Figure 1: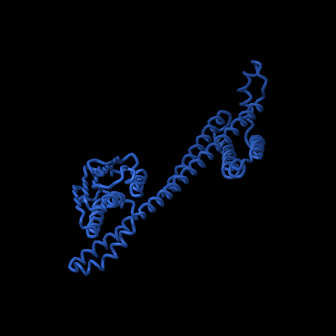
Figure 2: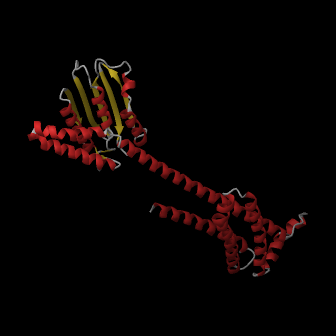
Length: 356
């Protein structure tokens, strides 16, 4: 549809150009001959110019100019100018001689002032100038069209590459989580058989979301939050010594967001709050709220006592690199993210404008 619209615009521009050239030729010739003769001769002239213009755009430029065949291209253009002189001269024989007589009379004043040029020389000069202008205009027009086409092809290729990279980043969501959840199903069914149904339902919802919804360019924010809650549910079954607090205030649950955008942050929070010594209580606080089309997301996780000094460097693993790249790709200039350590917690806050 878009391509058809562009072709229509291009054809319209070309028709307008040739009609303007036809009109200017007719207005000039109508001063020296009857209007019907002027119209016919102007049509013949424009048809000759149009024939070479499209011959130049469709054959000469692709096969000679674009392939660095400058010498051959120049020779053919010179040949065209000479042929045009012959054809225009031949066309004069088909019409009344009034044109030559009238044109000659117009030049009498010039000849009286010492300009010794015949009407034929002047007509030849004008024809050469017009022929060269047709070559210049048609060549420039073709090169511009080719440049636009290359830019569109490049943009399309970059878009396809970007989509492939985005899909790859989405697929980097830790697959071990699902393997652990499936492995834990048997044990959970033995220990808490009455809750097995909820376990299976939540796991099914997560698999469905990551398999199907994640392939969409955007999903409702409610779906993303539900996925996060399901993820937290399974993590707390695995590590029951961690306290997770989720605060949300989303008036518009249908606000669209890129799927699986926030989950790497949650994964990092669980990963980097782990304390092998079990000396400190593990805590994760997640705050999600929305104001108009802006989403405010904050995630805080406690840090272990025996953490390394450069926490920020440690935290900046594949999960954070993942989300930073996706934010730059999808929400460039529409997001603000900052993170760092404060009072024994690692804090990450994200402000995201979801208005397309």
